[in-house]
Image (cartoon, rainbow, N blue to C red; front, side, top):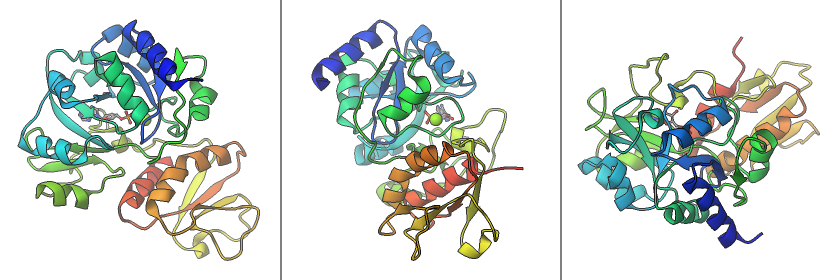
Length: 318
Ligand code: AMP
Ligand code: MG
């Protein structure tokens, strides 16, 4: 495989209205021309995603971003500080973006990915790409090309293999005050960039929304059940919370002192970024065993907060 010719082939498919799975630094995305209604419809169909759930639109430069959305002072500063990178900003949309991409809203979610393959692909296309995670709706997001192939292999026109995703969890989503439905700046989904970093960069507080509308969630992170394995997933803080006689698999934050064949861990060195990077691949591999899983809650800081958010939504609800 030659990556230059693969990117060129993928761009040709996208120009003709096809769908391509592409690596990004967060998770693999299922991409289509964001301004083509027929192309975007194919993403929803392949994923089984409800049309009320708007997509994130990926750009390769600010000129492309400005062609689809309007920037205010805060979003301009956020883009300058965190792009390219794992931050999605909700902006007022321009008329070039069709309703299907934004679920009929007058705002659009925009991100500039830093993964070189994603950046080169978008730039080669010359237009923005809508790209939600490349997995069936509601399941664990893919962090390598094999994950995409396993689940959507027959439904996509091409899979670009860019190895493992360096971040491993979906982007942080923010809504600047100029667009916010609640006045202040909102953090709609926790991700690799935490609220403290956002505040330090632009000098305002980012808080989770107070009002949630389950019928039309402002972000997928706000749906109660998401990112879920088929196995039953339970959460714990301390080992004493695991019922005596539990025979399933146990995922610890760091390597436990006494390792048994049913023990797994997210990080060697208490590194929340490593935990985020490894989380989804580990849950996927354990899901193949169909056994119950107990997973330890991470420290509530940085990307650990994103891990805990995904774990809460993926865990078993009776
Ligand atoms: P993903 O499935 O990871 O691509 O995440 C896309 C998510 O971004 C969607 O589920 C949305 O809820 C959120 N999102 C996209 N567009 C908007 C928007 N205009 N306003 C609020 N949230 C949005
Ligand atoms: Mg998703």
